[in-house]
Image (cartoon, rainbow, N blue to C red):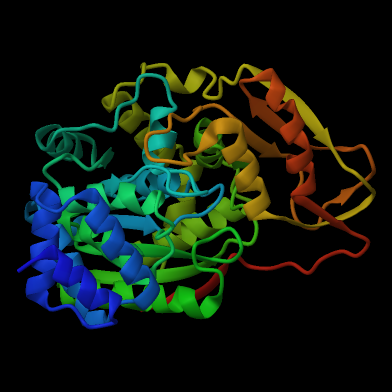
Length: 424
């Protein structure tokens, strides 16, 4: 078998066999398949798609490309979650501590920033001292001791996905539904959790721009998980606007900490709570989830995780965001905030250095935006609407993009829910 023929078959819209997919993924892992060959195949898949059967075999091959975490000793208490990628989305830093506070075992394997969205690992590592490079032994020990961990893939867990994940970011193949599904679910299957909830973003700030595509992705992933014997469900959530007031790596950690300290009247907690309810499956789950916030139990779990992964013991008493410069941004006119454009905001943070244009790029961990207004707020011309955090003085000009992301109308917009649908 030759990788040339596999690429040629997919270019000609043929369905790849399980054997062809296994051959490709084994070659990715061993290095026998060159990156430029995988890039060509990724583009052929992005253009011509994959059947559900192909996608399942790709997921299984990627999950089998390395070691798997064995959580069977914890029975049905293991939980995990994943987001398909959004703007201002730091729900992992709420869901995982809340579920750990409720007695669940939370073993989460995450990725880095991809395209315009921030990566969970990049956000965590923006906190002084924190590492996400945990060995399998350290990962297992931490879960056993405090019940939660968020770490990156080691070279021995889903190594094929790690290689393809980086290639997708720089080959315009990020938005392919089969590739997204296989990447997410291979890590979820390798991570070993019995109960998994998926947060599939939908809207201008997401990879899935419309509800139909979001439902297709969610349904595909739920089907893969159930075929593999896992209890999987998904939420479709709105990403036309940022989920949090905070956008940027360390800023999003700060936003999650505010929620864990009791700021629950915000879309970030609305979505995080809905995800927790799906994972819990209990009738009175909502009240129990709220109580973990009120009591400080969830915050204590998050603090314990940060310390276990290298942060100082007084991590929460020190500033999380340490940008060199800040500037206030003001409203261009009076009216009501119709929305904050998630994609425009994300592109502004990318321009500040908060994301990657190519896989080798270094990111600036403390740049970003804190919006001071949200949908429906009344504003007057020259009112402060945001604070921009940046490291290079010449980036002050990007404040115009931050301002333009706030859409101001003469009419009060209707209220909306960020949870659009549930896929079971």
